[in-house]
Image (cartoon, rainbow, N blue to C red; front, side):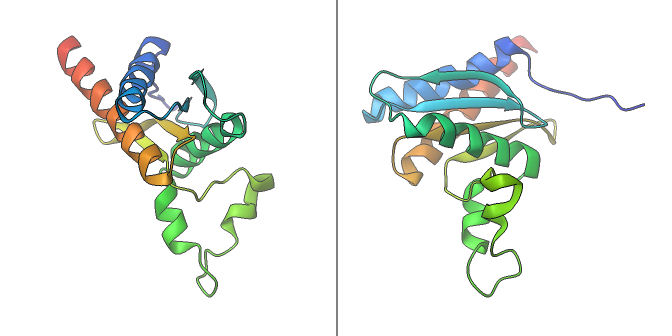
Length: 144
């Protein structure tokens, strides 16, 4: 039997809060998705003014990061013609996303979730995802 660790809904909301605070700071309204370790949605927020297309993109970024246990920008760097991984973005009916902004969330060295953001540039999306993870880690440190 396997024991699976995943974020609670309350912990997923910490990710959302940290990412939202950073998005407000940089002035870019975002769609923010948090999924469990298997890529299933736990929490989602669409800030006022975030792009409608970013709803699905943020969820796909979070899915990719959690399920593949790899940042989406890492896939982007490898997904070029001639590399063996080229074309991975067409897998799973196009659900794997190679645009920066999706990060795996690890606790004690284990991937327990994924966070994906969309509406800014890939760098802005990554920055907000990192802020969400930093905020979660601070909150977990306060709880433990």
